[in-house]
Length: 79
Image 1 (cartoon, rainbow, N blue to C red):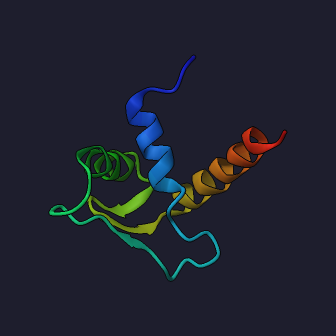
Image 2 (cartoon, helix red, strand yellow):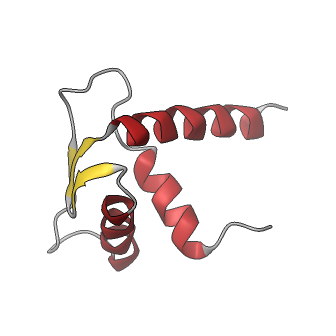
């Protein structure tokens, strides 16, 4: 099953969240972010992975998703 364009945007946005601290988050600015990034943030919020529609903090599920995203990226980056 291939990743959809929406899923790839969500994965890319998850990859931007700091994974070492729960005290740091992201803000997706409506005036400067790409439309696919704005939609990704809304989707991640609707799925319960981030605290706000425009970023915020990772939820516990979001932190787990970031960890899995990093593992997948590491596997795919291996020669």
